[in-house]
Image (cartoon, rainbow, N blue to C red; front, side, top):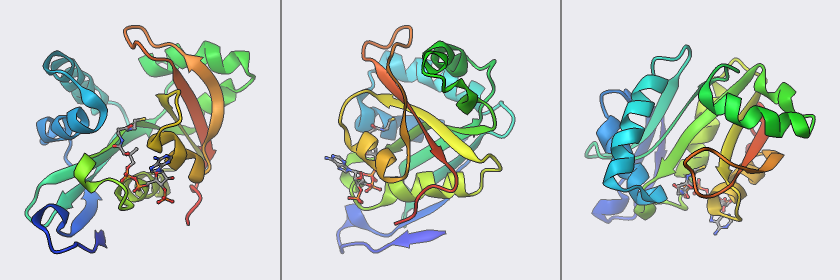
Length: 189
Ligand SMILES: CC(C)(COP(=O)(O)OP(=O)(O)OC[C@H]1O[C@@H](n2cnc3c(N)ncnc32)[C@H](O)[C@@H]1OP(=O)(O)O)[C@@H](O)C(=O)NCCC(=O)NCCS
């Protein structure tokens, strides 16, 4: 478990990173994601079913960032990639076009990473993704992020993730994504 020093205000009390029973706390996690990423009520209902299905996949794991009073303020989850999973089937032709589809084998996928806006920029996101990949058996990690210069993309690059494909279109997602991959362990500061 890792602790972050608070700043004396209730909203910035110590944050602890540790294993998360995401199925039990899916509504809290989606509330964080809704604030961090921007999700409407209908999207939350759809994501809820998707998250619960993901958690049945072999090797799916989650870590949470929790305040001293037990509030969930960040989470990450992922799983070993399986080429039969929906996400993998969507990105595969884009990676293949770049000669990068080998990244889909023996790879740990970061499916979601979100930190409550009031708790961002304190190293919580970096600690969540580093901690979950540090315990992965796979030699590399892949993920997708909206294809813009965002804090998420900056964080991933600083951890060693590089672009494997860009302008990747997911059915029903309005914005194109970049697929990124990094060797494990991730680069530590
Ligand atoms: C991406 C996210 C999870 C990062 O969480 P966080 O706790 O704020 O991240 P950290 O404090 O651990 O790391 C911040 C890093 O992000 C990067 N970063 C932060 N703000 C940035 C900015 N404006 N531009 C570029 N990079 C930025 C930096 O690399 C920074 O590293 P540093 O510690 O060396 O300065 C968080 O910003 C978030 O929830 N964003 C909205 C949801 C989202 O986009 N999720 C990812 C979906 S793919």
